[in-house]
Length: 339
Image 1 (cartoon, rainbow, N blue to C red):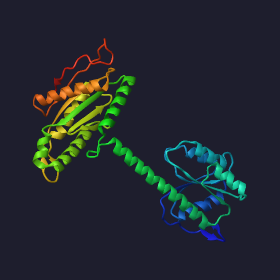
Image 2 (tube, rainbow, N blue to C red):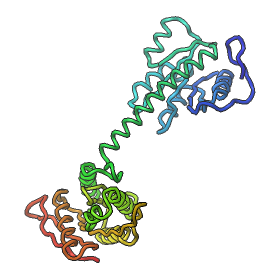
Image 3 (cartoon, rainbow, N blue to C red):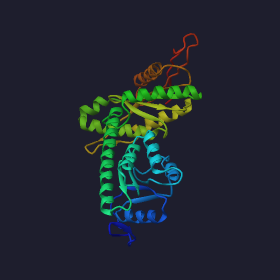
Image 4 (cartoon, helix red, strand yellow):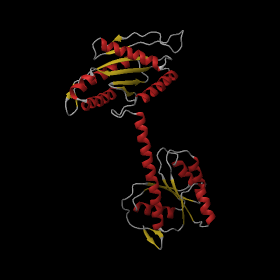
């Protein structure tokens, strides 16, 4: 599409450029096609709809364009109403709206902006002006993207361990509490594994803390690989990890615990500076009863302590039943050797 006297006329094949996607809502098929060609020639990906109702339906989808060109006058839902609906809906991302219309009175421009449009163009418009206004909108959306990325990076750092990338202690305990509540509602059991690397101080003393950090990172990775896709694990502190297993039976817990133990012990951890042999002791517990997370952690910790006391590089599973006389209290803690 070429420019003639400041208006849009067809041209040849579009070229690539910007990767932004634009939603165009325009009921005039000729102008819609001309506008689509021009935008594509500038490198935009273009989605077109014929009216406001179709645009609104598309905007209900999970992933939608953030750059919108809306015609004011459309059958059914017009551009003004569409602007209002978009602004009234709570979204985690801002959408930049360019409203276009044949109306050029000042009060019409004001009405469009008050309805939620970010900018306004009167038909027929100069293509250079259209491109400049789209670039302004793209700059705003790019800034928004950078702010979202910065926010997500801060959120990740607040909830994840810097070294291993696993959940932090606080986040893991929070997720554990939520998993226990969900298990109670659904009538399913929740399993806990406390995993501690054996003689880890010896690793740091022998190879140094840089190698020790590499061992911790790889151990965390191997633990994640041993879990099911819907389980999660966090760094509980030092060389200790906590894994939470949802909808988990006693057999599941034992198999996964043994798989995690073997994943750490059966293969040397290559750090670049040295190949390090590491083992882990694991204590676990599984319950479907209304027992506080601190009680369950105490049972798993007792089992872990017993696993270390009786030889290390092994799994011990404790039992934890609710005390019918004291709701929310554990009745018995009996670690039993499984490997």
